[in-house]
Image (tube, rainbow, N blue to C red; front, side, top):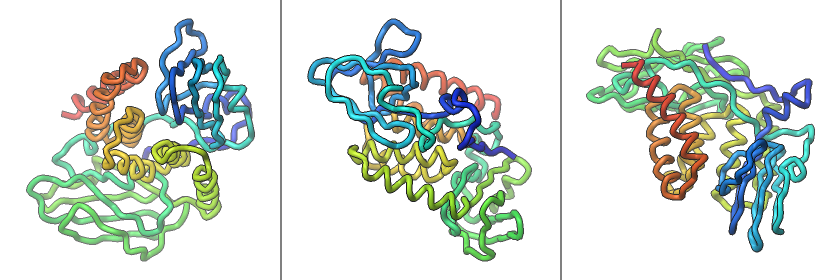
Length: 314
């Protein structure tokens, strides 16, 4: 059973520094990133990750905002070079972290003939009555659903690819719950897919609410706040919530490369490579249009990884 656990507290500053995430949340005018160890600067774009040793170079009249790992916004309004570690200073409080390893690929999440779970999949959740959704299989008119784990062994039948858990018996924090979907054509995810979810503890939920409240007070655009919120959710293993908020930007017509790149990353991370590929392809087109060379290279690499898994699943 796969699930990534992020270390919120680490013993050495070096390891903590590797896990912390800073990213660009606004760019106006000519702003460039000078990556540590590189001689040539590159154009900066909304959503670009920043390491502590990187620098931002601003031309006259340009400005930038950086969302630091503690969810505080660093605003730069003057021209010059600025090292990220000087603006996003090391603190004991970390809100944004980098993700762990991707889930091991399964046939289910890569085969449209299987009613594989989409949400909540390999994720923590905040809601005691989550809405389950899965891949709608062509020609199927009903599905059997089972949630098991701890004292829960809940089953129901539905005629659509979604259902809300009844809440009885109640889900307990920290218990991993497994979901099995069986279509009326006999195809089931049992033994070929093992997606799980768990409920955060009350204290962790309260911390998430506190972090969100702080984020909402930051001087950012709605889109930038949503991207930051997705990073916040992802940092707490709340992958389903991160997907939900990013999908709202997609449905709203977002043309920001980082939105599709991040969505692709999360889908790939939880083992849904078909959906990851779809988002990556859109991100690739946007990156090409704006000549975002770094995003192009990263997305092309990710697409290669996804295609390799999909080819192996055939």
